[in-house]
Amino acid sequence: MQAETSPPVTPEMRAAFERDGVVFLPGLFDAAWVAYMRDAVEAAMAAPGPLSDNFSPSPDKGKFYGEHFLWPRHAAFRRISLESPLPAIAAALMGSKVALLAWDQVFVKEPHTEAESHWHQDQPYAWVDGKQNVSFWISLDDVTRASGAVEFVKGSHRWNRWFEPKSFHPNRQYAAGDYEPMPDISGRRGEYDIVHFDTKPGDVVAFHLSIVHYASGNRTGGRRRAISLRYAGDDATYAVRKRGPKLPRDPGLKHGDPLGGELFPVAWPRPQARA
Image (cartoon, rainbow, N blue to C red; front, side, top):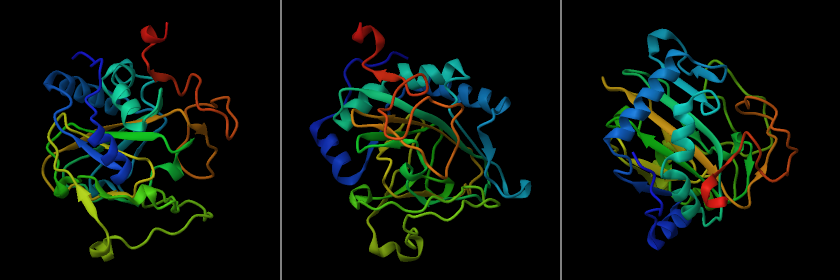
């Protein structure tokens, strides 16, 4: 469980990330890391915080647990977010000198959970503006489309279009906003270049916060656990959004300020490298 000092990011991977908005990083974490992350998820679920939720509409339709900003409360998530190989990989994929931790998140779709993650982009929900960003989806189980593998519209991060954020809880709604409605991608799949990756524990999918993506419910008898880590680069600024998830506290920033501070720490270069 040692962090790598040089990221395994080739020029071809960087070009694919810029072109497609998504790249697959198989086998990035070994069995020890996977066990550590699974334990961290179980500890979080046993003591859910104020930013946790169950996105299933009712108990008889399964459980879709989600929580964000775990790292300030859990030492294990702080280690995963700041000491794993991912901050260095984030900087390399973004073409950035730094990688700021924008937020971490956990998603667990228990067996036979109906709740979908509808087609959306992450950035209209997020407190981050800027082009240099990356989200890492770390698979902790064998995941297929049937159990909720994330599906992506390749290249959609380059559309220069933002779509209306919708609540992921089926019994709640956001107020209408100024962005475009999301196209009917599920009903017109043939018009889009859609890709997904069947993953094994330790595999990682890296994607841009503006790429359009979706995940079905978990129609299988196995669990679907994942940790997501989101990083931002040199051009990142703080964004005040009208809708979306809450922060754990006021970051002390105004809209348009450079991203940083206690809530958005520098994850790469590591502190010893900056000394």
